[in-house]
Image (cartoon, rainbow over all chains, first blue to last red; front, side, top):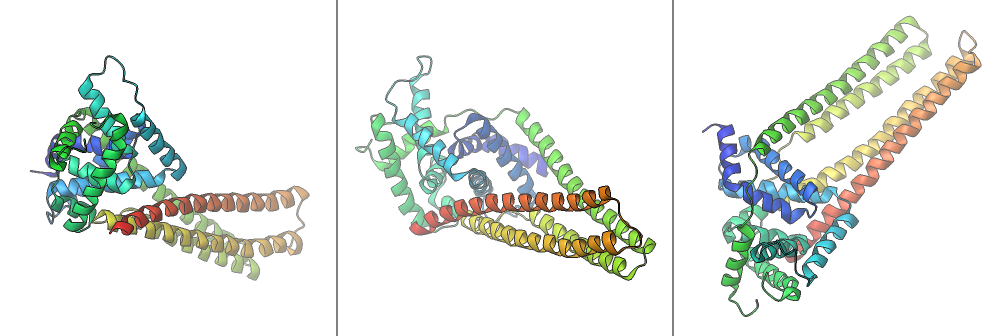
Length: 171
Length: 200
């Protein structure tokens, strides 16, 4: 399989996950789409250097999160914080969403906003866990030990629960 | 939510989280076009910088050839050395842009922080470059205008020093703005790493 085919296969398999990863770093829909494209671009550029030391999935998420961090660090800190707070306020808003929005859709949106409102570290680890990565894979992506993954994930889960509580518990 | 088992709770979140739309196929083509544009732009910018440096060296050399006065030749040689140094510096900066990303997020942060620090050091060097150019230019211009073989017109006097002052102000503004942006980025990166290390 040549590089172009591999790239297309990665995008077909992980495209939705990469889009969600972008959503975990950027609240604004326009900027989110730009970030998603930047992530795809970074994967395409990094793919020739991938030697198979880790799994391809780990490699893809590592590049995606690095790009997300880079995207965030480019923004003015006060604006990034304002966007986070805005997302958090939307989570805490007890009013129902538009009638046309299905309950499942509202639940997904609340979860996305709740994740986005978390501090960066729990947000990263939760995003990876929600994509179904094992502790070992998360450790490889973040460059920490599996024990730290377990501790941080447990803490992140509690934080997410507290963030979602004003909405009645379930996302 | 808290009454749920953590695994079950996470599974529910996973189901909600992963239920999202797939990317549209045309995105792939858009990305290919974008990377081609970016690559072309970077190559053209580097080529432009090197062409400007080469052009400057040719002009300085030609001036020195046509004006074999000792002070003229010395000034042109000094400026040529500064141009060569600046071109080499620019090449080094571009070389950094092609480096691959780090292997882990922690390493990526450390690398990004190091890049910011180096950029700040390079901005310090830019002050040195500006000071060097002014140190050569001002005495040389003074020599050309006041002690040279021909007396300058008032218009030449104003244009010469006016252009030099404008150039110096433009360079200083660019350096200050870049330094401010880089320090802001560095603070944010260090804050991110601080949070990460605090729990590690």
